[in-house]
Amino acid sequence: MNIPVVDLADMHSGNDEQKQHFVQSLGKAYEEVGFVALKGHGIPDDLIAKLYTETQAFFSLPADTKTKYKRPELSGQRGYTSFGTEHAKGYDAPDLKEFFQFGQIVEPGAPNPEQYPGNVSVAETPYFTPTMLEAYRAFERTGLAMLRAIALYLGLDEHYFDRYVQNGNSILRAIYYPPITTEPLSAIRAEQHEDINLITLLVGASADGLQILTRQNEWVPVTSLPEQIVVNVGDMLQRLTNDRLRSTTHRVVNPPREQWHTPRYSIPFFLHPVSDMSLVCLDSCISDERPKAYEDYTAGQYLDERLMEIGLKK
Ligand SMILES: O=C(O)CCC(=O)C(=O)O
Ligand SMILES: [Fe+2]
Image 1 (cartoon, protein in one colour):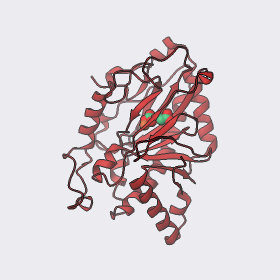
Image 2 (tube, rainbow, N blue to C red):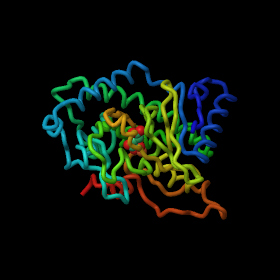
Image 3 (spheres, helix red, strand yellow):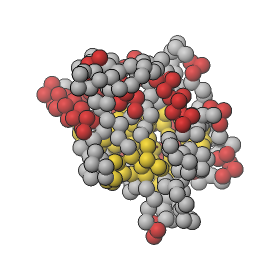
């Protein structure tokens, strides 16, 4: 299925009509599908290429080298998480993936610096984490522009989300799905799930395997062009908007047997706010037809609960 395509250049055009066109098309896509393919996203091609090269270099390291960079005491929120650790909410079989997570480096003077553990540097691939930082900043900028459009669509001030996502708890996750060597018992590369955060920016989703569950309850492959990235709504934004914007279920299926030898890489940026952002449903999203569907939570409380459900936090 071709998910709706929107062009972020319209948002930045300086032309009110184009900007409105972007805001309305994005909002409509998020009400109906929950996913868009984004062109004009502003992440430089050479940065994405470098990110892949460095990601491949890291995952090619021997298993006992990668293990040195595990941080289970941080619930895997920084550094390496090995194969067979994370499972989707409600599933016992772990996903067929390993990953490395890079988090926020707050500005001097930002509140609650103790909530942001340091990132993990990898001695054997010295350019990996600096590249992750460069990409992190680029995704933050693009993500903020998307949230400004979403704010306008919801009738909020354009800058409503700015203060929550600047110095926020976003995570850049480089994922490696290794070649499949034996018949997986019940597991697939990534079992069906919804993302936890506000929005996800996904590089690499154009590689085969990503599928979304439609409203008609059918799994359809997501297709996007190489120059596009995929941007989807997560559960925090769905909660905040009382289900007006949809956090769509998705998964990554195994390739057909003749392609088992091909690994897959993907690099989602999970845009999270600061932990004390309120996720109380917006008044403007509550009505007689749409009664309030969620209890009041902060982003931090919600994240902790979800990390426990997927086996990262004990
Ligand atoms: O690998 C992908 O394309 C998607 C991964 C994903 O959905 C996730 O990590 O939340
Ligand atoms: Fe996901």
